Length: 320
Image (cartoon, rainbow, N blue to C red; front, side, top):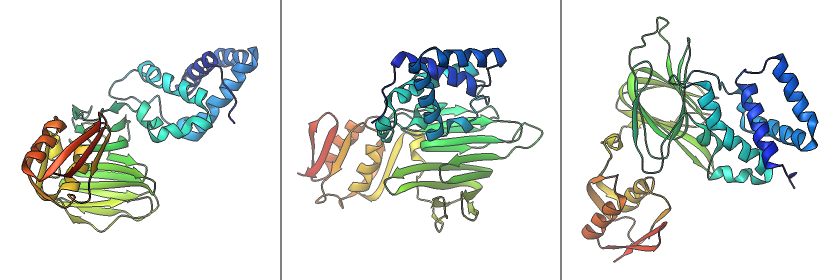
């Protein structure tokens, strides 16, 4: 069983840890931290748990002080403080909840909610779009332009680097990295019980796909592939309208209903279940992703199906 941690002490421990990681502790501050730890056993217990959290989730190696879209370090620290305090209190017994709300997503610099699509311009002029339920960190330095995809899907349209050093543009995932070669491309990270896998689709130019433990592969425009830490798959032709989500659209061209519903489910909360009896019905059309209820109504009107709603967060698509 995990040792119970005082909530107030956890908040203070999180505050000290953020200052430590941000490089804000001088000798006097380190002495103040030592005095705080010695003041009461609950403080020391909270600090030990904070260190355990950081070891477990890799925070100690994270460049928290790296400039992020001109975001002040104190703003970044404030965004991290609350989830860190929650994890300190929860302890190892409660960290299973990260399957629902991953730590990296809580603290990411950029996030989108379920159903939200966001477009922005980075400091170098590159354009970045985040699909539904996505999270990413941005780390630009003198040597590198880095986007760390924590979850979900992004589309990148790189711009010529105004920096004299001609910094490479890299998207990093848990499986490895993708280096842009003057390009427009999409990166999606999927996680399952079998492990994470990264999908890459190139619309223009080329990218270098580099699995963490495997050989790099060059992927040209019009092709897509996926990779895990060990190796990349054989490239396949890019699917038509693969980036329709950038315009908030879902294209179906004689697509199985089950596949259409799987895409729709990414844009709404809860479960969307497709009865096997109707899973292979074919769907063609262009649908707006911003209103999934209207999309379901259109499908019901055009196919021999019934959309049943046992609860607000449960949709069941069955034979009519």
